[in-house]
Image 1 (tube, one colour):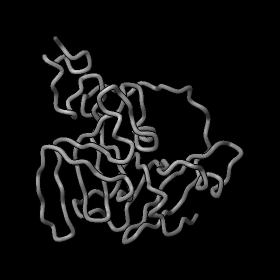
Image 2: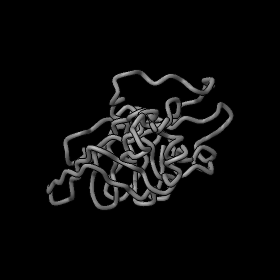
Image 3: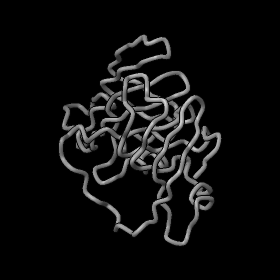
Image 4: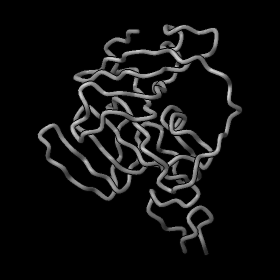
Length: 187
């Protein structure tokens, strides 16, 4: 008998190889180092929503507190690296997640009707790092309201890093910042 989610016989599968999920290449900056790898979202789910709400399927309901990664490279502060087949990163330890590009090569389709949002230029200061970019708020919101939403991760676009990340990356188009690690935000 075949598993309908993976297509594998007997229902056995690696929990990170479910065929119906969309692969997303990410860079994850944590309290202990940087992870690069592939995570997954439901086919029409944004990375931001997967971080804030988790994703659910009949076999993967446990990914609300941990972010699964495959094809993982880990870099610590001593410039030592290690590769791993899989890793599960506790979301509370993530300072930010940057989306690098869709690993599948197919563009993401918009799930939700796009609402016009107002960009708010901000400098977000995290431990040992500053991010400069655009937060996006409802047209009537100001910076304080955008920061005080209930979601743990907030979206920032056109992000520059100061100093550049240890692997040389100094800019990403999209980053989801964990509010629990923000020291302060300025404009």
